[in-house]
Image 1 (cartoon, rainbow, N blue to C red):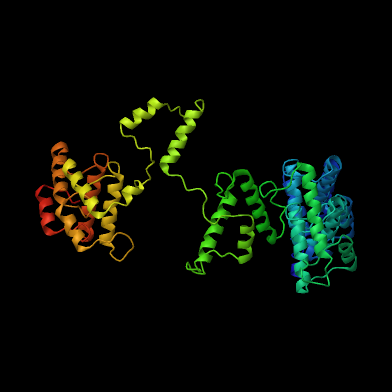
Image 2 (tube, rainbow, N blue to C red):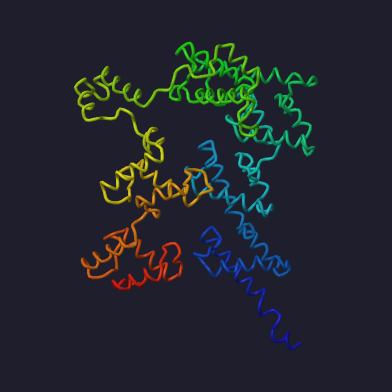
Length: 523
């Protein structure tokens, strides 16, 4: 009774206060023609939001008179009225342009459509029946993934327009849909209505690829070949020639036609050039085929000595087909030497003075007088240099030492001899590996001429360089910009002593004492 006397129960949610606020809400609506927003009247906007939240849980909190006032100002549909207006804008855009908005044509409506799908995905009752009908009328799918029935209708329109089922190149999306249909049908998971099945039968949808040895469904194979022939005819009518792998990768016959096409290419090449030695510059694919087929034939003739896992294989039928067109298993033309290639380029320059280098007899004589080498050298010397014996290499090393006083050969001075020294060091460090075999006799012969096995300057030479650097600069903190080789040597010395890994540099106590005597800075 005491609580009733002081009005405790109705102090928080007084119906009179709510009625006053509802009347204010109606006055605002009559004045502005719309409900308040957070910017126009924040107080009334917060009241309306709280009123909706409370009415969800307590339906009898408002009197019939208040409900009538709220219904007059469309209070309960204010949330969906914005979406309805945007849907009408979407319909107007569709009527004007004949298509739905994109991110470029109307970014605002495009984002609205995307948000509408996301909201509808989680809340199916967020749209009225009228809004759904409007969206369906303009072809707007609230669910982004269309149903199987819709996809089948799209498939029927594609077949009516193009006269054939979609391929991966013509329509990838429909092609994948057809593939998924066949997969579900083979797994027994396909659930389609009778009407959808009739549409698929009407457009000639094939549920599986016909096998060549099948007797029950033998009508699919002629149909498939006839479609390829029609496609071939369309290509010929458009371009005036038959397709090649470069001009039309989509058109391909069965795999058994590949060897036949290679045979035809070989015949055409022989008729034009008079031999089967195809150059990669003329036809890279055919040149690779000729190399592989000759390698396979040599392995077949030798009884498969190269092993069955990695060796190429060739059948007797392929051998007979190639021999029937006169194919030669060995090269009919010997490979040109580097001198011949160089001479041919000069001959081209002599016969075509306007193109390339102009080479006269006087120039050739002048080049011969200075001992110009007409053979091109490889990256590691010519073939004759690479096949030199170990004794001749020792003689080259002695001659180099007489001229320069050391055997620290750089790659710029003599590339062939530089790589020989690298191979010698590698052979001694890894005796079990493949490559040059360095015996004890060869080691003694190399030691006699003072061969540097480390491939670097001696410790005494490094000490002399450090003394010279100290005389010039007054310290031994060698900068990388001054001498990168000496700076790297000093860095390795400090690292070796700090980590006590002195084996690689052979940093003995005697060497440490020698460095201390010249004032080497260890830290």
